[in-house]
Length: 606
Image (cartoon, rainbow, N blue to C red):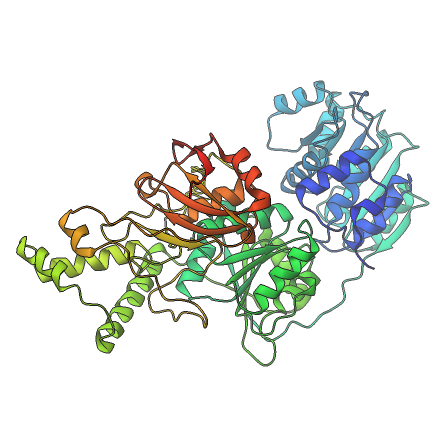
């Protein structure tokens, strides 16, 4: 069975809009088979494993059949546990967000009756309930099933194993006989067959077979990570393991956009692929990744299908895939052509059960590891800086700044103090003083449970934007040049072939150290097809080149190739933008709050 676009399944515009906003690109096999049958009013038995997308397979038809004018229960979804009931209710809410007047209500034990009674009085039409608590409401008379059109039993085999057979029979007997009934189960054991025979005599059966697949010889690791901490953990692993060529998979287009913007704002060389990007742009991005023009590619499963690369170091499952076969296809992109490969998976909360299903299906061992600490990352950076300094001293290939050192010595600073201050400056700025690329920020503590998300934006509170660590301007490093998407320099890391060394500082070190008048930087020339824009902020406002890329990409929606050279001065920023996108940048950004400053952005005067 193959996947299909949701647009081919006969859904209403409101459901298609919700699916697009969530970011789903294709319907899974169970969705392709079940949705049209349920929309047609058929009784159904769906046999599929956990993680196949069955929740949307029944939730979409259920939402479509609700009459918003009737403020009584019309759809009943039975779940074995309160955790599953909450999870299903959340997915129903997301799918029904554009269906005006449609309300869902989870009903399960351990939650206050008052809240559930208020939801019932408010006219919830879709009830997602555990059998025990629903029986309590039926006995109290607070729930009536006379208007129910559709009953769905999710994980029916598990409910029977938990001893809910009598409750299920009692509940189904109270629902109208002409209702539509759907059973979703991993197995078709005799107790399930008996239940189907009693309550859905003419049900059609669809079976989604899970084909056994062979996992390539790849080192597989997983980390249990809170959702809010995934970005920080990803950055720690990239820095600690010095990963230079990786593929990062996300579940939806929205997640791809957000993660790519976060990484770019933190100074990583990355780009993105998903079905919402024009085909010509996708081909350019894939070509750039194949020739190693970027370090990280963030993608959805659909967009990465045409990507055939042999030497990917690591595949990250930032989000778990829907099913085990997608997992195998993802990780099979590393370890090719006889090379070693690694697959790293992030698991949050209840997703550990989904990963266990994948491990059972693939018969592969996925080893759990501890999240590296911020101290480990900083120790690695310090070691890299030490090695880079030692190699530079041994080669003797560096410019001497004896006049600056002599002035500092005359002011009473010892050689050890001077060297320590310089090393500290280099460490804080990612190992470069006048590099042309944004620095990666230092590793941070992960947020505790309930803590505010560490990735809140200072860039006009744009959606999905990260707060890059401001780069502190130094006396002889006031001008930072950057290209959107360039690879940041790390101490001890060799520059890729064809890259240019850092531009020499245009300011006299002697003048800077002595507090003399600053020599202005020579103007930089913009490329053909680019227009230079000027911003009224600069490094004195704590703004770095990565922030500029972030606000242009996140709020103005510019692609990497539409952003040219960036020059950050003390009180001013010059940036090149593609001619055809200038009006968008001016309209979207002029007057916003940028790191606490009201931004003025205008065409620069030559």
